[in-house]
Image 1 (cartoon, rainbow, N blue to C red):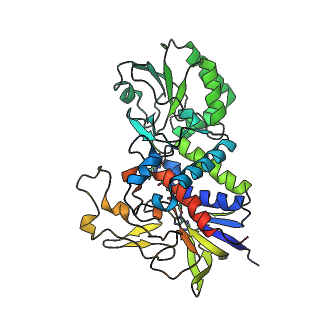
Image 2 (cartoon, helix red, strand yellow; image 1 turned 45 degrees about the horizontal axis):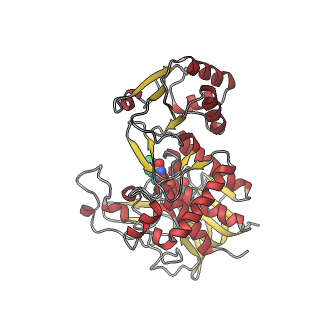
Image 3 (tube, protein in one colour; image 1 turned 90 degrees about the horizontal axis):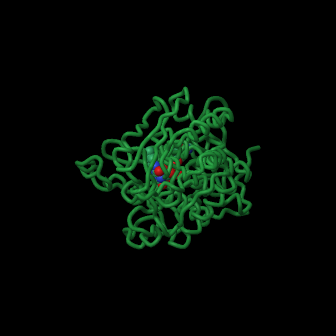
Length: 396
Ligand SMILES: Cc1cc2nc3c(=O)[nH]c(=O)nc-3n(C[C@H](O)[C@H](O)[C@H](O)COP(=O)(O)OP(=O)(O)OC[C@H]3O[C@@H](n4cnc5c(N)ncnc54)[C@H](O)[C@@H]3O)c2cc1C
């Protein structure tokens, strides 16, 4: 006989995983179904909360009234970020930063990105432009060009190490090998680098990154920091690994690599979902459901020529006018109208304009979240994930 879960979460992104962890911590029986790996794997791993202004939490007050952050509230956003920090710290990759302060991290093209919480491997990323910056790169490393960075700073230089592999993942794997790490540290010690900071692309291991980072820092006696790279991004993958591991440790059941084939309803309740996949169908029954299936990138929303649909429950979606209004002429401008598309919810994170009573929604699928415009990606996912979990609670 199939298990009946208190809460079934659809989507294993930051929002779904944070919802699952907070429910499991309260003793709820939880399942997470995810058809694929989430967007955080492509991300810098930094937690953008709200990029405008110095204090991201205060900035929430000036967002449009319909922004999902208002449903959570400043205090609860701060609480959810602390919960996140606890999980990452337990997982061996503490995050640094202050929830009331934005900070800068150096990005791979030499500009700085505004964010809020960062993995400790980027703690020293905010540097004074007058201070000497030394960038370490790797021979023929793909998509990382130290000259892009050093050309922007008057007081900067670079060196290149031959790791014998050229991909981000390949170099990261090598750093978890002791002889390689020791050879790299000796090489670094032998360089005549002026007083200042040392920046290294984010390839310092995957599961052992914290240890690798500390050993290199101690070995060269300098402030070193990682520069997030283009995807695949090691800090994003580390974030994903730690959240997923925390789910398993807390007894959450994972159905990974499985999409939803069908939905069973009884009256105003969703009773179960059946998972797509080869062989025998799996039926997952729940008392409550949380939809955390992401936006267009992850397939939670689908855009045709003139409509946007929600792909699991066919929920009504908000659409900002006809297709001619969806995009700006300037493609790279932040704030294309289509970013407002998504599922509208009430103050309990229940979808509006539907009779379903036991469904809650969180993360980037929420209407009006405008993640790119406000640069609030993971922050909004964490805050609404925890808030939707609170709202649904699920019977014990
Ligand atoms: C390239 C890129 C880089 C980014 N970088 C940053 C950054 O550095 N910092 C930051 O704060 N934010 C960043 N963001 C934004 C941030 O990553 C997202 O807003 C946030 O992580 C979204 O989380 P989510 O849980 O809502 O959804 P997602 O991460 O999209 O997860 C949704 C999950 O649901 C699953 N799913 C979808 N449909 C189904 C289905 N039918 N059945 C089962 N599962 C399903 C998907 O496979 C996926 O795993 C970035 C976004 C992108 C695209």
